[in-house]
Image 1 (cartoon, rainbow, N blue to C red):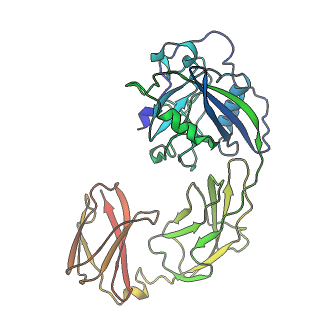
Image 2: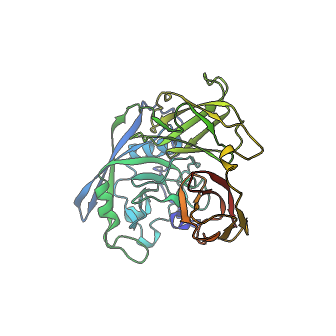
Length: 385
């Protein structure tokens, strides 16, 4: 998957002229997110306009690079030279203006490069991101737009914009007839124009889980903090503190999703406060209204609700995927979660032992919960090796 995004050849061609002069050192000032329209044509007939906005407070170097190239009309008549349904459309290579088709996507050695700006922003449908070679700091003018979510690219490629309208034309382009190298059979050109700035400030997210004032929270394995989606949110910043004023912050982190997983090292019998801030690529929101929860008293890993159940025996653990649960009772439910809190397996015991098969799941640590009909539970960890 990643190799399919490696577009800058080590044997790239040299280009005469100064159109590839380094990005100016002048300071760029953005009041928000710069907006551009990408006019697409095939056989001189207009296909449609894709409107995009860039994220200067997420990837300012890539934003400046794109902005500078547009000001020189660099992208005009370059092609979307690679189209893969369910993945991406890619373009912006100067070779695609007039060069031989086999060189499209190889780039040119004289182009200035942009260092990686990896963040927690996710490669979802409509996201614009920087193409590069195996060298993480090799991005130049080429970019791709996600036709569909591409989780394998998260944290590996620099997200710096998104489509705001015209995603249907991305669909048209990605479904164009193509050759064995994923090049459209008929050239699809682009013409890129600056059209203004989106200066909107995002709303703060509304926190949902845990419930405000929740007490006796079992944090033996993990604690999930969740909130509602903000329509233009790209990255969310989370802060957790034992101080209601957040003068001292115990935990701070970013996520591109709607939950944050706290590692199981919170203090027992302690009140924690938490809040979240939205980043829409151009501005930060104010902080959300804070919430608080209180952790359960630590009793050497055994919680009160565990005292009503015997501990299940799980073997082998670690395992390549098959785990046998014994010392359980018929009717007990078994649930397995990944570290994001997503339920990935569940079953109900039909005997005093159950074997579950998790072959095919990614290697790593998972949590399980065995619950009886009265709602009492035992928890533990599974390790898939």
